[in-house]
Length: 374
Ligand code: UD1
Ligand code: UDP
Image (cartoon, rainbow, N blue to C red; front, side):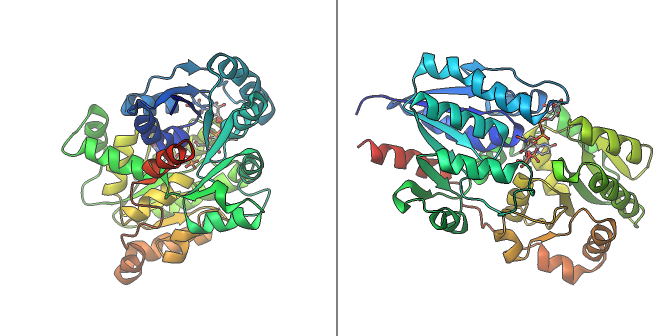
C-alpha cells in the first residue's frame, strides 16, 4: 500500500476535542502521512485543546476575528483551504460535525478532488433553523462527503433515509468518548494550576450546578431567560452555580451584565478540557445548550438539562439522562429544582449510560480507511 496522505481539518473547541484522538491514531501509523490544518475559527479556546492533546498543526489559517459573522467566516475557510490543499494534495480530508469550518473545508476539499470523510455524520433535527446554522451545515456536508462516520445507528439511519449508500456509511461510536477516556487517563491523580484555582472557588457543602451555553438561536431573549433562571436557581438552598462563559461577545455581554455580583454564581473563563472534566465530575447537575456536553455527561452519570427546543442527539434523551427544557425561565427553574430536591427524580436521571460509544470510534475509522486501500 502506498503511504496515504491524510489531512485533518478543524477550527473550534469541540471539533478539536473530538478530532484529537483521531489525529493521534493516524499520526502514530507509518502507513499514513498525516497533517493537521486548523482554521482557528476559534483561537484561545482552540489553543487550550491543542496544548492539552499536544498537537502541532502543520497549517494554521488563523481566521478568527472578534465578533465574526457567518458570511466572512465561511468564505475565509473556503479560500484559506485552497493553498493548503494545493501544497499537500491529500488523498483523504477529514472534517467534523457541523461548524462553518467543517462545511467550508469539505467544499474546498471536494473542489481539490480529495475524498471527504465526515466524522460525526448523520445527526439531524430536520429543522433548518435549529440548531442554526449547524443543521444545514451537516446536511450540506453529507451531500459532499464520500465517507460518513456515523456515531450511532440513529445517525446512520438518517443518512440511509437521505439516499446515501450503506457502503459509504460506517457506524463508529462518537470520538468524544475516545477523547474523554484518553483525557481521564492522562489526568488521573493530576492537578494543574487551573484545577487548584477551581478548587479554591468551590463553596464547601454546596451542590454545584455547572452551566455552559453559546447557541445562536438562544441569542437575545433566550439568553435573558437563561440568565434569569440561573439567578433563581442560585437562590436555592445549598446551591452554587459555576459558569465558564463562552468567549462569543453575544454570550459574554448578557451573562456578565445579568449575573455579575451574585455570591452563589461564579462566572469564570472557558476552562481547558482537563479542568472542565474535573468540574463535570464534581457537579450535581449540568445546564447546557452544548452538543459535546450532552454526550459526555451521560457517561459520567450526570443529569443534563438541555436549554434548547430540539436536539440532534436523541439517544440520551430516550435513555432518560438528558431532558430538553428549552430556553424558558420557568421550565429551567422547575426542572432544576426537582433534580436538586427530589432524590428519586435525581437517581432516575443520573444513570451511568454510554449511548455514544465505548472509546473505539477512532480505531474503527482508521480500520475503514485501511480496508478501502487494502
Ligand atoms: C462555533 C460554531 C458552533 C459550535 C461552537 C462551539 C459555527 C457557525 N458555529 O460557534 O457550531 O458549536 O463554535 O463553541 O461554526 N471567540 C473568541 N475566542 C475563541 C472563540 C470565540 O474570542 O477562542 C469569540 C470571537 O469574538 C468570535 C466569536 O466568539 O468571533 C464567535 O465565534 P464563532 O466560531 O463564529 O461562533 P461560536 O458561537 O463560537
Ligand atoms: N468544554 C471545555 N471547557 C469549557 C466548556 C466546555 O473544555 O469551559 C468542552 C466540553 O467538555 C465539550 C466541548 O467543550 O467537549 C463542548 O464545546 P462547545 O459547548 O463549545 O460546543 P458544542 O459541543 O456545542 O459544539
